[in-house]
Amino acid sequence: LKETDYPAMTYVDPEYRGNGIANKMHKIKFQHQIDNGFDQTLNFAFETQSARDYYSHLGNMKDTGLPDFCNQPIFITPLRDALLSVS
Image 1 (tube, one colour):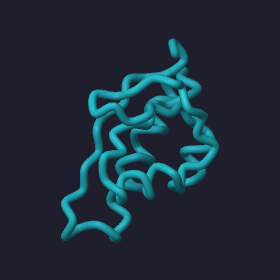
Image 2 (cartoon, helix red, strand yellow):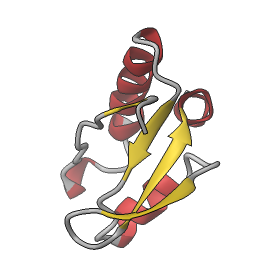
Image 3 (cartoon, rainbow, N blue to C red):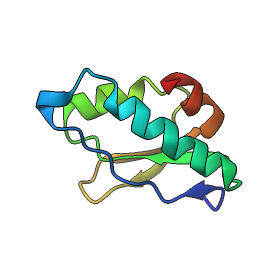
């Protein structure tokens, strides 16, 4: 996992969802990670269905076999794939 940057948690208040805010925030984060030489990003915190749905649209997620703090699976996604999915 040394090819990954520690992810920033992203939360969009329900009243603002559907406006592309999460995509804009992730686009900035993913580009920052690429610019700093990282190849992959970590995806976790799938305790809500909306979170699972959002992160699944990034595509090409690979299960690390490790649980997060809520005992949910942690996935890695190639940054170039993730950036394309939010562009």
